[in-house]
Length: 318
Image (cartoon, rainbow, N blue to C red; front, side):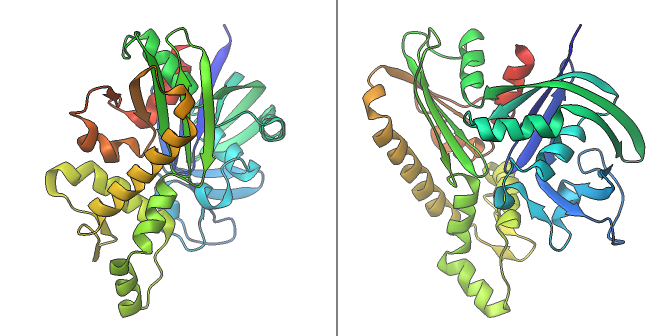
């Protein structure tokens, strides 16, 4: 039996799973602490990693460090992100192949990722040593795999086509797929996702007034955390706060509405020739939950229970 390991290295979060196990989610932030003492308690979803003579902190703990690097700002395809975030999700020795999700096929990016991962690796995660042998990397398109899986599981109306929109941290993908699983059109739009919404909030008059008053600079990565964690609680208390003192709840609904409407308008315009037979609009990705309440009562919209896991769950189901 061939061991299969699935990886979805995203701009906001990285999700990995060994086939037969539950997905592991880590924030896509990294900090090199090889030559510093900036270390604290390891955790399962924010581990300390020793790899290639470096000591790294991944995930939420890295966001607390100065000069940490985010995939959204640096680029999630870089080997220095792909390698540690892929390998850190494995908590047992591995010998097999990796199924790797990409927003679109690119020979250059795929060759780079394959050269980075296909090898024998030694890594220490939270003090435990592991040895991995990755024999091959197979690439699958984000969004497409989730739609195919949704059709096969009866989640979508088979009388019409599906427009699927995958709103991630830094990239938005859209695809139109028929019930017979033919892809009519697809596109990956860079720099349109959680990052663009975070920038809209940071550049708002309210946040700029806070910045001027307190002489502070707001970080995109931390604003994305504020949006994500606020979104989980928004139905309960409508609270959105950057850190502990900068409440942007008053401007968030309007900015979210404008951001989502502009996104939908641009996709509708670009994909207009393929929308006549669309009966399903499926939203997935980490930002899909932000519009769940807005769209929950509208016919034809489908947002899975855990939209950020839709792609990795589809890979695991293959």
